Length: 368
Ligand SMILES: *Cc1c(COP(=O)(O)O)cnc(C)c1O
Image (cartoon, rainbow, N blue to C red; front, side, top):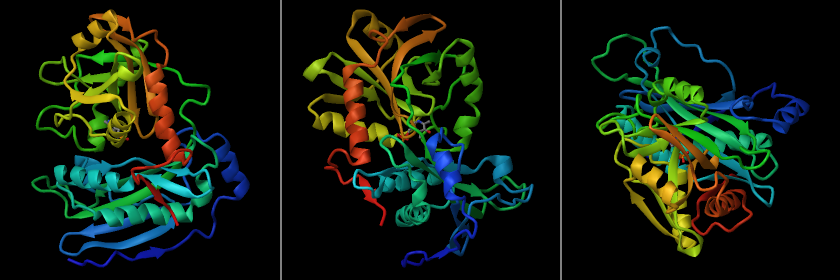
């Protein structure tokens, strides 16, 4: 196998969006609605390895109807953000960590592993080209969506594909809470499960989402914003929330203890989750990875030992959970408002990501 880095063929668009239209999109980007002028593609063929790395104008793909991903969902993805720094430069939050997780997802889905340095280089190439799409201010960002699909044509299912397409697209993302932080209400899903032991819950693969929209619709029917997933076997251990990991705060002030469900193989190992374990512990909080049941949660809120609950992930960074609904009853988390520990961790993490605070961990990857 080659050890020299894959060369990128740069084919910039002759017709990028006019600056005025781009500025209009950036004024109110929302999430995942606008896409930048370019995309990255890299091909993989069994025997040949990774090849044909390109930056090219953003545009539709042409796929044979028998392309394997369309039938058997051999697909993985990532999500990470580029932030405008206080000095005007641009930096991406922990791209190596996403590159490593992308390799783990690939292994689980029997797909080829893209070298982490190529993954990171793909982000660099795209962000450098579309730098004008990185919003200028604070909590806004450029969301990067790398993904890989089985691109071989054929309906045989006795083996994984032997051809793959890796891509990166980018989309400006607005502040998640433009009107101030608003806690979400959650529905504890007992009927549907997201992942089971031995399944694909730990991999970031589209199929994990396809099966969950029905539960999200159920949550909406019960007046809730989000679904909380429980373990598939006992339906009692809390795993995660929609596409975010969960944290529980016990106690308050400097003595607060901050815990998150342990990685049992059925939940997604979030990079935000991992970052917060580190930040919280460096702020002097005691932290832990635990098993927490729905009874522990309900009891903890009833007797006041659990003071705050929040969810975390790349898209929303940190979202407070304000209330819980389930077939067995409803309750409020604390006073239903964003708690002080939640808000402090959110400010610390966003401060680091936007360059307003120091980065003692070397997590920000500068684009040059
Ligand atoms: C991506 C994802 C998360 C959050 O991971 P981050 O790396 O923090 O963005 C949590 N749960 C699921 C199911 C996910 O797909």
